[in-house]
Image (cartoon, rainbow, N blue to C red; front, side, top):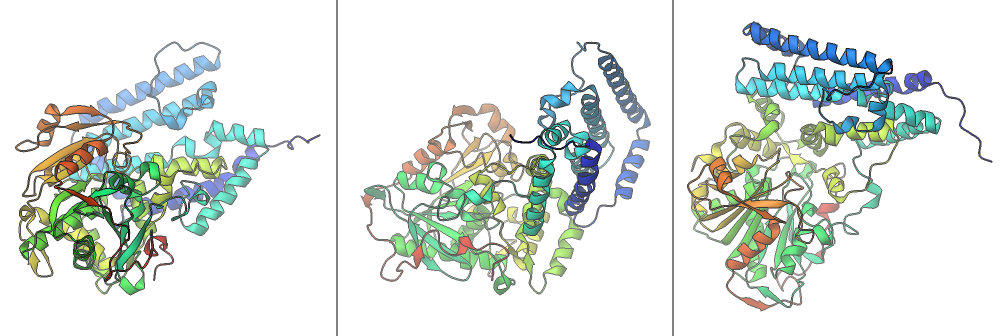
Length: 583
């Protein structure tokens, strides 16, 4: 007969785990702090000074807050005395507190509602301050960061789910959580999926193909056709260099690569190298010249076509559009079509990432990387995760360390964890010229290899996709970005966010997207006229791209050619190299 777990003191469990959990949260708060150093004293001084300029409004907000807290306290006392609470809830639903344990106990119900009332009050206070937009946005962002970090769900003493689990398991959740914590400390990041389930080339990035060209910066993959006949123009895909390419080839049912192959397109794809010391001096110009332009020329040669279809995703789209503008200035016109997925060319509004970027930060990075250096993929990943800290940080702190559970396997989150480094000079240029000074909107101001960049010179038909809830590429800015190009534009807006909205496979046909004629409209005017179309935007893109084609030819049986024999099977070596292994 199996023995019952030994008697356990809740106080002892909290004492054992509380200090470790406090240190985790303090360390995460330090890492999430403004890179140029936001002093909390200065933070609160800004609030106090702005509040003093509108004392009446501040007092009204204070009075509303105190009244709500007194109402909550009275309700809690009534519940503790056995009275039923029939009044509407004071706070909205929050999935951090969705488990029944939070509502069953008057104490924990009070804890979570008091926290929510305080959070709402502080965010309204900051949002209503008499500040310039940039300062208010920064204060709002760091207020949310702080409030997310100190939520009662993040601490064992104030999380009834964790306490119940500890009592039921004899504290096994804390033992497993400590093991998870030690493993994550060794990796240097929080686990957000069960990484043991996935392996690049085994069950992600498995579309058959071969590497047919490589240099120090890229491998070029040519994929095996899946149809007997193909369109005569090859399609070149340029993924973001900030992550691995296989976001576009996760598994067969949600692979954009396979989808394009099944539509009869001969597909080539850039696999960026994970940067190590040997490429620590690489520049933005190198990424365009040795990366995108080289890939265009090699695709033309191997695909036996003077013109090609092109597609860029996120910063891959920025690099691709600039490369096509450079080639146009040099008298080349290789692109028959251009597809941009969640891409910024106009950087006037870049969402919450703006809070990390100002003159001081960028100047510091320029000094730091003046002689080369590596921007850690881990640091980049944490910065992006912080923009959705509840979803990508704190929920896993609770799940992994307090509940002692292993995250569920999810291929998209596996990809998200597979970080890539960037060369310091390239990163500093990107921050200065695009994010900070937004110079790409001005024709001819930016130069690549001495060639002025004018986006109006890109005159091929363009299909531009944006995602409505995108926190990295706000859809209105993506809309304005497409308007900088010189050709006809088809603009489509999809549901969901940066990744889930983009990787929305046609086979599942989920969500919906919006379409309307593009020219001569502001973003909100366009949206007011747009038609909501059920299902994946991939089908709309496939139909648009098919309309741009001329003829089909028999699919090739062999990859590469005499001058470009296959080097190795897809997905190639570069994509398998982790940030810590990069040479």
